[in-house]
Length: 299
Image 1 (cartoon, rainbow, N blue to C red):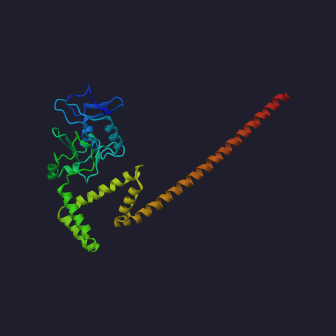
Image 2: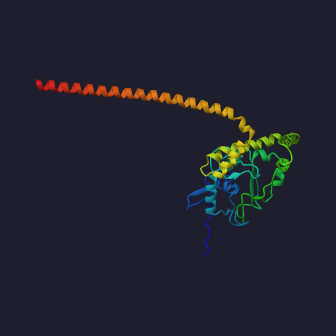
Image 3: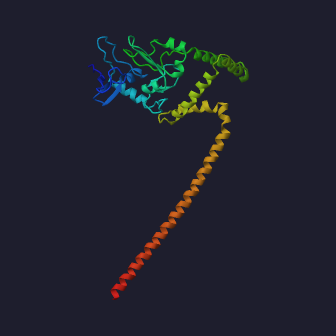
C-alpha cells in the first residue's frame, strides 16, 4: 500500500503586490502551518519531493519534510536577529552562520539560484566577497531543491582562502610529530601573514568561539559535545591566560552575592520587626476593644 505524501498548497497574499518575493506562501491546512516560498527554497535541509514540471509553477514540498525542517530550525539561532528558526545556512561548509531568509538579506547575504536546475543556496556577506569562490559555487549543484533527498553534509565549495588555510593546517599536523611547537607554529603564522590570511584565520577562530555559548545552552547538547568543547578550551594557552581575570570575576561575584545576602538578612530582620510591631498593635486594639465592651455592660 502506497501512501501519497501530503503537499503544501500554494497561496498568494491578496494585499501584497504580485511581484514581491514575500507574497507567495505555502500552507498545510491539516497541520496549520504556513511558510514563504523562499524560506522553503533556501532552507538548507529541505528539498522538493518531485521534479519540476515546466507547465506547473507550484512547488512540491511535502508537509512531513517541512515539519522536520521546522523542528531542525528550533535548534538554530539567526546570526542577524539572534532568534531561533534559522534554517537558511551559508553554503560554504566551513561557515556556521545560519539565518532566517529575510534576515539574511538584511545582513547583506547573497542568495544564488538556478531555477532550471533547481539550485537555491545562499552565501553570507563574508564569503560572498570572494569573487572566485562565489563564481565557482554559483551553479555547482551542491543543494538541488528538486527530486533529491536532503543532505546537509555533501560536497561544499571551499574558497581559495579556506583551501590555503586548510593546507597550512594539514602541514602543521603532519610536521607536529617531527618538530617542536615553535618550529612548526611560527612559520605557519608567518605564512598566514604573508598570504594575507591572518585576519581570516582569526575570524574563523572567533566564529567557532562565538558558537560555543549557543551549543552549551542547548538542552540537547550531548556529553561528547561538552568533552569536545572542554578540550578545545582548556588545551588552549589563551584560555589559561584568562584564568587570572576569570578568578577575579568569580571573587567579585562572590563579594556581590555576600552583599546581597547581607541586605536580604537586614530586610528580613526589618520585616520580622514590623510584623511583631503589627501583632503588638493588634493585641492592644483587641484589649482596648474588650475594655470598652466591659465598661458598656457595667452601665
